[in-house]
Image 1 (cartoon, rainbow over the protein chains, first blue to last red):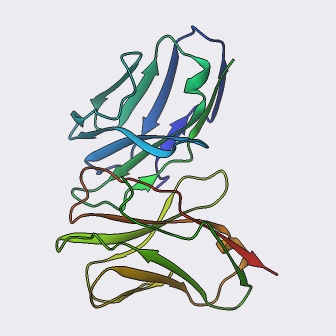
Image 2 (cartoon, rainbow over the protein chains, first blue to last red):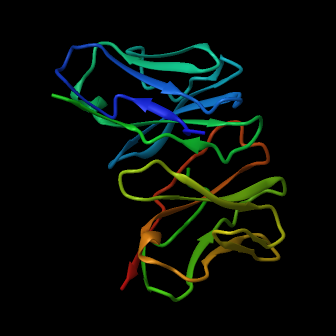
Image 3 (cartoon, chains in turn green, red):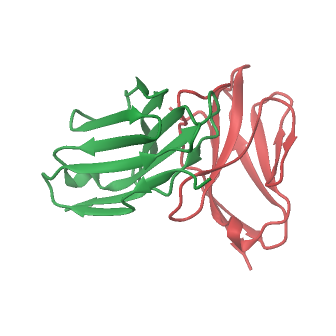
Length: 113
Length: 111
């Protein structure tokens, strides 16, 4: 298995632009998590899905952030409009049923200028 | 609200056992202890977890004190590739709420 796949690996954009991050979870996993990592705040859980349904989005910082999971093999995290403080590494993770030891993807490093 | 306390950094000589401590004095009876690590520029990697018994797998051993207020992750023969930030996390059994990462311990393996 290729593991969790994220794209793009790096994204540089200007303030005000829309950014879309993509994630393909491991086949057969029914939980998908989005995390954000910064030097100041460390790793933070943003939102997670179970069977494509958002379960907890309390970590999403504000309305500029939205996440979708249209099917079991694809999820997106969108920021519109983006701001410099959104610069971070965004990780997607998936897991099989109720197992905390999710597998993390390589991350997307986002830089908003 | 940190549930765990870990040293900020530690050094260990290559080939020696690396012992990483974690305090979790407020752990409740149905909370597990999980360990993850993050190698520079990579996503976090699961290492091991346990409830109250000591656990061992191909990566590491986990020693949990009898009162469950602290634990130690042991890497038996550390290599340079074990240099990473190690996170000790306490959460309920299924962990379906996702993981809450603290600051972790930056383990540096010295040649």
